[in-house]
Image (cartoon, rainbow, N blue to C red):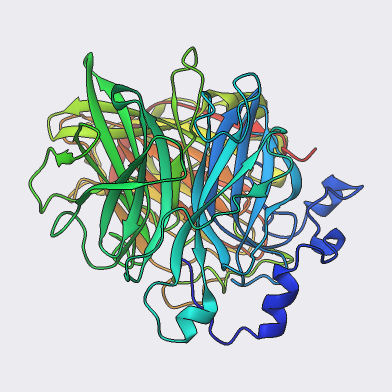
Length: 531
């Protein structure tokens, strides 16, 4: 969600919109001592975060010439939301990142809200050549003055292009390419090339629905259809859609991601998805209108989209989300930055007993961060069992894989609850576990340290499990201020942030009211991506 701060002064707006303004103080260039700079309390060690100031939605994610581009909603003047720019970083592996200067600044048409980027391989736009195809950014203009004046058409769609691998951008002189017909919440264009129709398709959010437009040149757009009225989660505004094809059992299906605020399954912002068919004009949903499918059950994965132009020889559908929630994003206790992204994930579409489901798992590139390996001894767990993680016990930054067998293998009976406790010497803790009676996963951060900055932050939050198996698998990615759970091979995913007063340095396997069998487990300590 792009918050609307009407109290922002005109002076701030003019300064931030001035392309000639001094950009040297935005801290977008790496400091001389990156490792020292990235050692602040709660600073993520293997998640992307800006060097300083405010960040939210990932934007313009595109792969070109060996680089994964990540643009993002950015305000270089403060650690709360303000006039939006596009920050910029690149990576060769989606793990280690190089900060680049701000790519897009606000101008007389408005702030630069969320959008996407593509490679115009056939130079349909005419901005480059076939030998040097242009990168095209498609974004929403948000005109704050028109909004303040009470108009409804203050959001329009614009484009910009680059012919030097995204290092410099030129805005199209005839922006906007898609004017607003008089609708509030008209934003977040995600563009893809539709090969079967030899045309570009733009999917973007319109209040509590999405619309599809088409173009042959990225400059002139024609309305195709709309989708979403009375379908899926409807308790908030839809944002940041993404439409893409996937293969399942040798057949093509389409997936439509839609973020919603408010209305998430555990409160606040979250991302739902739909599966169906798309013919270049209409998206037809596979499921009944009341079906709601959540991409991530945790509180802190929002506005995520996928990278465009991943090479065919790679073949993956790669996803990244903003690791926060609009309920408290501006209050989290970090400085001089706010927010981080999730780890990048590979998406797959699979059939299950419950129907077709989108499966998320961490990208394999993360394995290169492993610096130590510690095997967990299998056996019955009743109560608490500390996990030996060696020197890594100074700070939990790593990856944990465990598999529990739900069998009554002891005199105590099968535990009503079991899982993993992350803790420190002050008694602060986060629980990641499974409730037997409800057959659901949870993350409990109610005693995780700093929780009083928002009443919406503490609590136990739940995610449904896949029925039918007596083995519960949990794959955790633990950073200094977050945990991401990939349960049962990615069928249930939960992402949550936390802020202990001391770094967590202990892992305990625990049970309540009985026992459970640990089949196997491993912990991998991680190196910092900023070393």
